Length: 425
Image 1: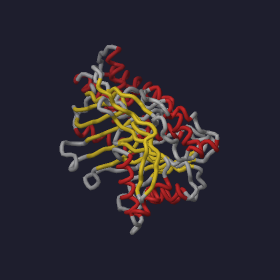
Image 2: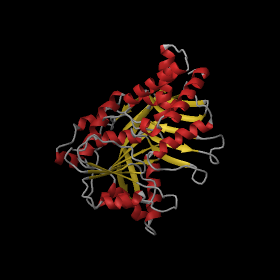
Image 3: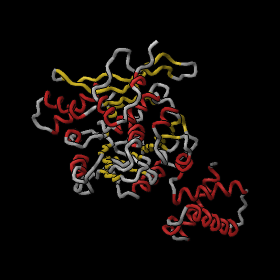
Image 4: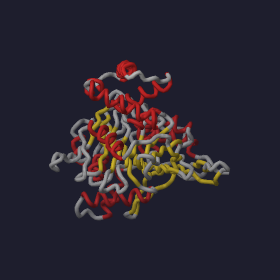
């Protein structure tokens, strides 16, 4: 919006704040709020004998509504379903991600204080705080979108805001197949693994699609089962009838009241779960999660930040060692092999697309953790438009079926074995 119109809109917004009760305005449903603001602004325009075109008047009213009860310049970006991430680096430096690619956004903030005002509005709704003594905060929007904010002195150039948006309904495995993120045979095996109560670890880097895949796999859990989700910041929204969502709590202003994920995992075991889903293991809770998998709570799902299945197990070993005191490495590795059945590796490719690049079974032996790829994605080159080209491959002829295949067959959920063998010339 042009500077002159913004200045005029700010003038009427200030009048509204002075002459009305802002808290009552903000409490109105969005459509009613717009009608009320439009009527009040119309009266002010008549009083001041100001003339505006219908288009400018609509834009002015929308700006006031966004600034009064919304998130200001972020509102059109939040409403755009093609945008998956919003990054505010400064008043005039706003970026968005579409289809895995970054591009500048045509919106601006007035100044750094304007950004800070929006950050405060976001975190106020969930009782978090941000100031010089605590300059970083994680929060979420009412729709579940994840928010991270950093302010000075940590952020040297001013407040920085990052928002990862989430769909109102999660992707299904069929959706991911249609998007080219995984092969139909991979989706069939993963759905069978979930129904057969195999324990699955999803590994990948930041933004590689771990949470998206986790929600898609959770969609394959039978509807009659009781599912408990445990997250540092609640993101999973599972459209199923019996879900209990638990969220970790950071310490309060006095440094007390923290409830870590490890405590929630232990408590979940007392809540009669059929399945436990931990959004991400990143510390000592890894030991409790593995113990749960080894003591009858099968079919559990979790994610970890790692660049390969091997790296995932190296990280898990370190986490368990931190939590388990003096457990020998050999014992930890035996624990991992006994607890986990499948590791799924996700990756964000150079063209911005997200792929499941490996589905591997977990094997042990000689005091080591080994994995064997059942499916893999092989890159073959880059197309003229910059898109990454490649193909999915399954097991080679003559390779044995996974060690837990008989279990899927006994339960009646195993797919056609032939679907695991494809991709060879």
